[in-house]
Length: 355
Image (cartoon, rainbow, N blue to C red; front, top):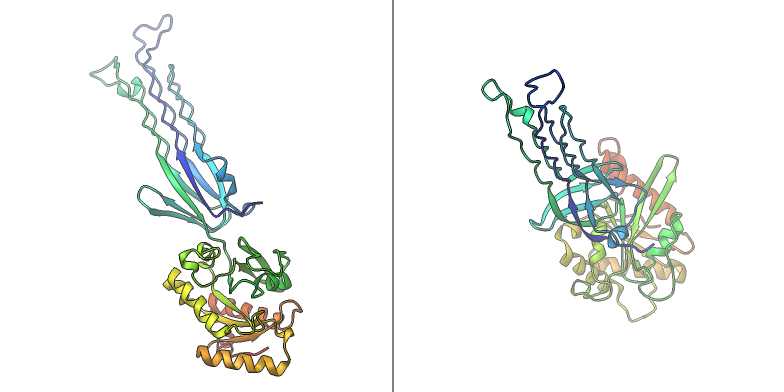
């Protein structure tokens, strides 16, 4: 299935039904009086979050959504049938913007959550409503009001606890394959990942978190180099960023510390808030070097970056150190959600672990 994280749609609620002009006409009942009923309300348009969807691709083919109109009122005091509300399913994590005002009108983050995006028209009144002591035979009715119409922009931000950040071929997809059931494409060339992938990492029974893998960034991404920064929005909801550093790059002349600094600058250009998000350094591909070489390179990079946060050494392809990393992530997420219950676990993460 093609991954689409932006779409534009038009929504239109139904028009309210007009009121009816009618008088009672029955044998042996003279002066029956007015009996015109009200019209029905127009249907509303709702967006509803659905776990079964993970992309906005369906909106590339159908972009207009219109709820039915309310039925006109009828004689014998019969009210017209209201138009049925229209529910449009969207993926969980969808942001809804109104294009005309550029206003954010909703954020659907829970399965089954609904958002009213177009209010149906109000019903018209039949002539029975206008009967009074001084107006026994009114010929006045009102028309139903027009339903609301809007043009919307849908923007998907995947829901994940942890986001992977790094250059192409840093091993992000390999890591998510190693620790979850997700199977993103892995190959020996850059930009293998073309769209975000999600993986559920189960640490133990009833303890799990979601990891998001996005396409790699390169220098100049903010100006459109590579795949640009369009997928960074999918890291906006994460509690933690894992910055993967390739400790054994193909080009031996590549300075891993300098490349890490360039990536952070690209992140800063995209969002000042995202660059302040808690970030851990994860050195990958340790299986390609001798243990003493790994320690030497890690120490050199940490010194150049003046890094004070947690550091992990892993080999995603051999799964070395991945379990310890996942356990630390789980503790961090639990501490963030329940700080009082996990204060000791939080303190322990202030000590830089090396696995």
